[in-house]
Image 1: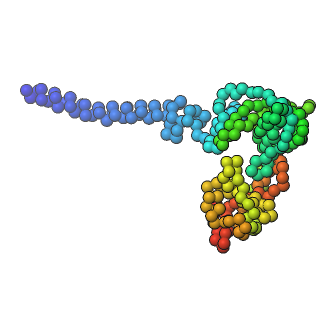
Image 2 (image 1 turned 180 degrees about the vertical axis):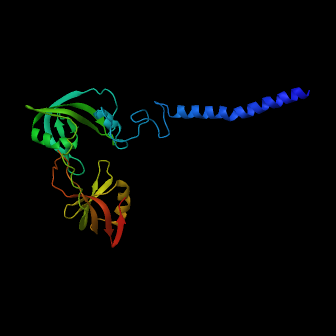
Image 3 (image 1 turned 180 degrees about the horizontal axis):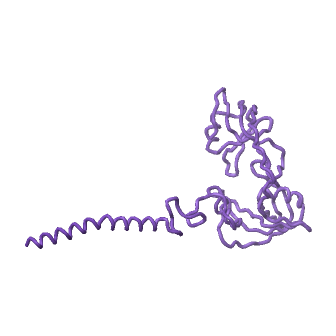
Length: 268
């Protein structure tokens, strides 16, 4: 009986001594597995792998990849194949965006039908050199609908006589342009600028300066600043990028601080 008791005590002692060694082996094995190549380590997945953080496109990424990484505000379009069609006619009127920058024209295709053609603003200089009102052109592209429900024709290429303009990526400037300097303008509000949805998105001063403001600010501003009232604007002038052309020479300010009846308001 005494011999059995001693044997049991000896086995228990041996198991107790072996337990830390077994635990150490298990922990070491887990550490090796955590840092093994091809797995997500403590700092996340390896560079370029699944779950790569948003940022500049990696090597070998094409234009479509860059479009996908633009995040909120990028063009609404379906990824994949898009059927292209060609429409022909004569150029009606050159059109511009809210900052008066050329980005389209109307196309008269006969039978009284008019098509609104749109292209990226950085192609403005090329398009302006290629066409004018009355020019006969062929435009290849696809139809799309705006958020407001309007139908327009998105240009992929344009041919006028012997000149062809193709939708290509903007040219990166050779040197980084200087940041625009803060500018102050004072004047009376002559009118409100409306977007295509009929919402106020800017003010027009009596000297024709256009003050751009976010739409969510406009609802507050129209109550504070009626037409005819004097306003002082601190903001940054809109500068043209490579390839852009302004159809009408207008000073456009991005509002930063507004002073109305002696009270300053920060625009956010």
